Amino acid sequence: MGIKQIVLLGALAFCFGGCGSSEKAEPAKTECVCETAKAENGWCESCGVGYVGGEKMECKACVDKNMETAGAGKCEACAAK
Image (cartoon, rainbow, N blue to C red; front, side, top):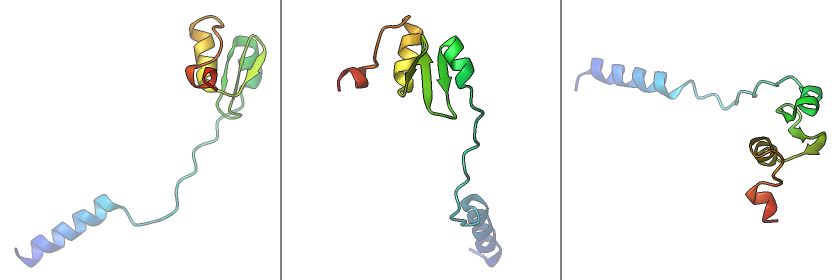
């Protein structure tokens, strides 16, 4: 293997490996939609809470289950607690 191939392989490894920065990008903050979630039964990603029938819920799976089954209660994980 010649020097050109070694340099090329090194350059490719650097390009695909990134610059080595240890900083992680912060996830983008989402806008609070609690008022809409309360009114329309839904989840506020920003606050990490949801509402079904005006009742505050802290488990997204429970909110999803209630939305799919018209108020069927808790998700499997919460029901098992």
